Structures are given as C-alpha cells and as structure tokens.
Length: 333
Image 1 (spheres, rainbow, N blue to C red):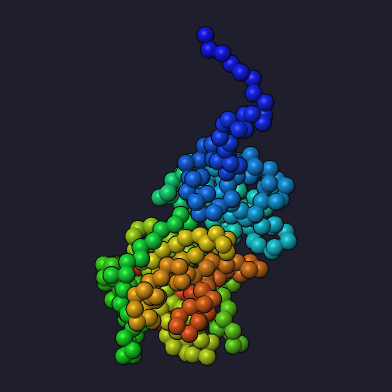
Image 2 (cartoon, rainbow, N blue to C red):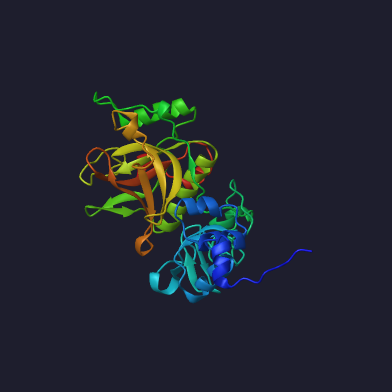
C-alpha cells in the first residue's frame, strides 16, 4: 500500500517545481499562442483578467489567452473619436481603434457603420479571416475570429530593384519590383488619396478622413492577404510640386506587424531609393506606423530614407481591380 506524507508549504516548494505567473496564465487560459506571445515579450492575461481590467477602465493592451492581441481601449467621451471609426462599445463606454472591437459584444465595425450595434469579436482564431478582433468580419458579418492585423510579410530581397544614381524614376522602379512579384501596378486614375496640401501644410483629404483611411488600410490588408505587394505614394517635401502635387516618392508595401515597444501597428515597405537591398528591404527600419492622434489617422515613418525624412503615405494604389468605385483620379485633384 502506498504511503502519503503531509508536506509543509516550505517542504513542497523545495520538492516541486513552481510555475511562473506567465506559465500559470498560459495553462489557465488554454491559449496555444501564449508561449509565442511570451517569447515576444507580450503581457499575457486571462479572459477574466481582461474583463475585470476593461470594466475598471485600466486595460492598456496585451495578449489575452484564447483571444489574441487586444488593443488599448480609448475613452469615447474624452478622446473625441466618432462612433463609426473602429468600434464604440456603448456597454463599456469605450472606443476601440480602427477595426478594433469590444470582444464580448456582437456586431460589425461599430454602431454607426454597416449596421453594427457594437463592435465585436469571436473567440475562435482564424488567421486568414477579418473577423474576430477586427470588427466582427466587417461588411460580410463573418465572425470567424482572428487577430487584429495578423503579421504577414512578403518581403523578398531578390525582387528588389535599386536606384542607380542615374536619375531613375522611383515609380518606374516600383513597377519593376511589381513585375518581379508578377502582380500589377495599379494606376494614378484609381488611388486612395489620403493627403493634400493646404496653406503650406499636409492635411488629410476629404471631410471624412477616418473612413478614407479605413478603406485604404483595408485595401492594403486585402492585397497582403492575397500575396500581392502594393505601391503607395510618399510625401516628405512640402515645397515640392510633382505628381499630383503631394506625392514626392513611391515605395512598395510588403507586410504588416505590431511593434510591442511602441504599441503600434505598422506596414513594412521596400524602398527603391536605396542603392542596395540590405537597407532598401529592411523590415526593421522601413516601417510606416499607423497613428490616430486626436482622431486624425496617419501612416508615417518618422525616420526614413538616406536623409532621415518623415515619410507620410499620401496615396494607395490598388492593383487587384477591386473596389475601384472607392478610389479617385489623382490626375484631376
């Protein structure tokens, strides 16, 4: 017959291996992604912890076991965001940034967009879907789950075409890169025009820039998910007057990810303005960060190019032939 010995807490600690707090959370939450998330330095929380912090107004973002990455919540009343931008949850009185959502409420993008009553996500992860944490599937209403901006990278330095110092046109170089990827270029007659100049400054174009950026970002993500890089225009010199009067340069967006240090999502890009692929294809240096200060969206790389320019995405050129009714002709701006 087996004999059992009662151990004190001190004896038990010396005899058995103790799990760290993160390991306990991973086991309790049953999340297969916790190990990977922990390796990237994410704070990991259970669903119960997430709900408690959300209700208390102390949620600052992190990885939730069984759900995935959840953005920080922003107070709807004090931060001045409109209800149709991302998802405003009336139950928690919290706003979730573009395509974000309150995970325990159903609906599409938000109470004022596409008929959704609240932003919502589904528990089930679907790495190929736009459901889940990006607004319950958007216009399709497909609550398949999935993380917000699941990391994806199409960067292939063998397809890079560099500037040779011979006066080559950056748009022409981008088109050569697209040829190497075997996808189309798009054209200036069908662009999402994000910026214009006014009184010596860059300003967001249209009276509804939030919707304009949402459509442009959805377009970029749609292309990346289909394995298609996409050309975007870049503004960096307020005094220049080339192309449509705003765009000074062109680059090719090849991927997306989340910067844990900055707490921001970004797009990676291939820059033909460099003479070698090492820098022109750097996924750590070439990043256009999505920012929403004071409800004004932007896609910016604050330290770009050989001369440390501030790159602002001025236009997005779809090349898959879809949703062209949403675009404008930059030649006629």
